[in-house]
Image (cartoon, rainbow, N blue to C red; front, side, top):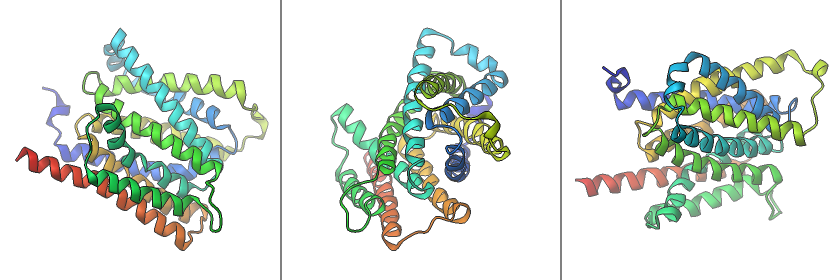
Length: 300
């Protein structure tokens, strides 16, 4: 009997929720780590180590996906993951952890819009309202008073959010065909290799003797908890939870990110930023809850 099939849906949702707490704190950890390694280098080291660890632990599941189709799926997800995390980390190096967390969470609103572009099926007015609300929230969070431009860090973060939305769609598709853990391992290794190649080709080399001991603690958190544990929980959870519900739960990462940024990074929240955060979160709720209720009514 497959033990994974015996787990209720609530158990898979709990996996996703547990991941959001760890990922929320990871924004602060990454902010410290990116001051030592460049964005691509950090992504490369993090995911190479995570892929090797998962490959050693789940080598049987890895062998099952070593097929042409499995490799294509894993490499595709790896490329998407690298671009998403590189943009997010690049943005984090130029903005605060709290803003980075909430702007990244806008991918939840983008998922149904991207599906609309692909399938050409109108997602409903709730998604349009959510998108408008989200844009208003982004403006309040990212645009400084008296200006009309968005900072480089915020723009990079938003670009990363678009790619994270694509990742959610691809994960939901591929993990229904292949082993979620096996695909995750290939995804990590591909992402790590791309990060190392890109990072060491275009970013300055770090001074090994100048790396503080605290960096290795940050790296351990990112590799073991934020990557190995959380991504396995996410990819396994998304294989059993509908994408809309899954992305809604994962959006709580932004809330924990702001809380950790205020508590541990000392980020100061202005009234404008708080209103922006609230609008973004309302947009996420509208985007995910309204379509789900409509689908339930249609099914009935």
